[in-house]
Image 1 (cartoon, rainbow, N blue to C red):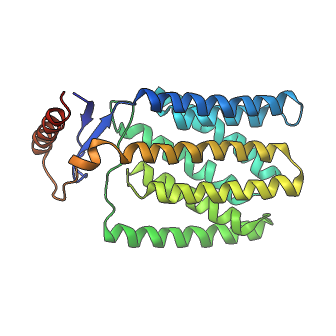
Image 2 (cartoon, rainbow, N blue to C red; image 1 turned 180 degrees about the vertical axis):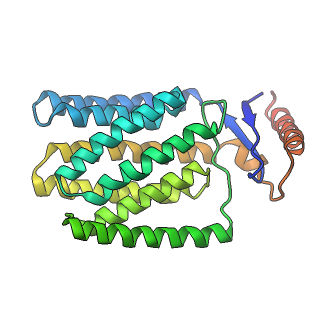
Length: 268
């Protein structure tokens, strides 16, 4: 068996949890090591306090190794969120400060209760419906308006980038919680805007703390891009695209048939 699987009634085709390849595991270790060394060097040089380094290290573990356990992931989420909230508040980047506390922590709590999979790597294959697209756009617009008004009232710096990046980060987190494939689109744009925001903040304040956040988001961006490529090359995309909804038993039969076909075609 290539991977373990668990079935979800709301999914079109069920889920397969693909085991991570050696090359993918090596990529994560290499990415974590490079950014850890950069963060440690910046801290040892006395350019910033220990808090941004803790946020960088814990944030990478939280994102790269989500299979460590529900409680550990939730604790890491809380730790990163509060450090990020403190740094954002320090530089008057209030929309980002709010969403980490008000959205990321609750979303992580919801995610820990769903138990999506039993393996190391979850395929994000759920297809978003037209109705959900409309609701999602409405939610995004309301969020942008609310964060804009709040940021203006509190005197936030870099309001446009702050609000847009924060809104996209919330949307990407929501999409990931529901296992929508569109998560990657929102996530990449959100991370690109977040990197731009903190580069500008780093230059404006001449702050290495802000530069450390740039490192954190850059590591996330590289990780998500490579992860998306890794997912797009798996057998799930080739063999699991089914439009109709099935019962758990039908899903199980279908997956077994597709896996047998895949194994026979690849000499397994």
